[in-house]
Image 1 (tube, rainbow, N blue to C red):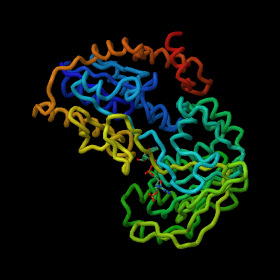
Image 2 (tube, helix red, strand yellow):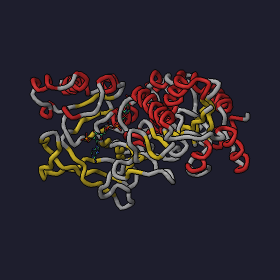
Image 3 (cartoon, helix red, strand yellow):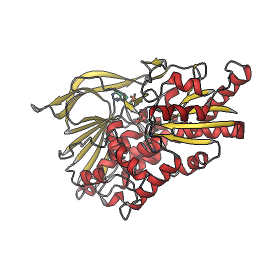
Image 4 (cartoon, helix red, strand yellow):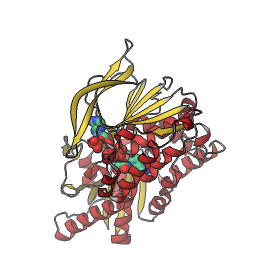
Length: 440
Ligand code: NAP
């Protein structure tokens, strides 16, 4: 029997567990750790609450989690409760599937002003992640700026624009629903430093902006390249640009009854954030750019976009763990094809950074298990370890309050039981409440 510890119970973690089971069957025992008492990482805390069909992938992870040789070991923070060195002594392989939960810093004057938020914090807030549940963003201003032209920027703009009724069927947490319900936003500006041909937004997600109940997307036709140039784009991007062209053609009179304008501001590179005497953001200064050989080049012309709320959706970083080599520049673990140190691996966003869909994590998971298999076969990693039994002894010695998959299922039942009429669940947003629910 070989023992594998997987740190992180999101997509990369569970696809790696699935791959290990496929490869070694009952010859492997897998412990999937999470610092939260609840599993599924990005699926629970990152995927937008109004995208329930994407969240349904957890049914697949549950199948893996319920396999005889797989355990969920929740509420254990690796690097704090238990060190990487200790884990490496107990398991034949340790796989870091911890994702990229931190915001990349904006790195510009004013970034610490009040109501300037990163998307990890803002998304975590509306998804009820315990770390961000208390964020309390001020939504009483009329103008919000969303920085970045990726799918996270789209999620944030859409969530800000939706009415309460449009969240029917979603699992947005109650505190966010109430705050968004009383928002006074009139204009959401999505700021991109490059042009329509350089967006990272995928067509299905971009198309959703056309179906908002109280808002409509706005694109300045002058920002769009000659239509003939679209032919050079790869098909997905071409479809997205088609959406932008449709947004640019929305007639002005159809906006008359709408409360919210969702405006795309292309060729605008953020330079600094401007605040009031109380230290709260009031605007963002951007520099007009042109795109040369795919790069944004400043023109020297600047202007200010009013903003009582700024959400930077410019990408994420992995959180370092003591004892794990870290690539500061790339913001992820230092690794070569998933190998970090002998017996220590990383996978998914913790390996290659925050890009790709949920599904991309499946080949990633199978890839890292392939690396482990190669290393075990070549004898580069040897030895019989204590595995789960050894961990349990350590957890008892430390007095850790470990949450099992059964505990999670009890929490899940309680979340389902207290859901609003139109919602699949009402999440617990603090760890103590989750633990209390597990033994109710
Ligand atoms: P992303 O796709 O990499 O987009 C990041 C955006 O931020 C880009 O437009 C980038 O512009 C911009 N940016 C970066 N640094 C900037 C700076 N300093 N100033 C101004 N703009 C800056 O990242 P993401 O939106 O965080 O998404 C992460 C991954 O999750 C992606 O693979 C995404 O597709 C996926 N995701 C998928 C869904 C879905 O399928 N529904 C939902 C959410 C996320 P440049 O291109 O100019 O650098």
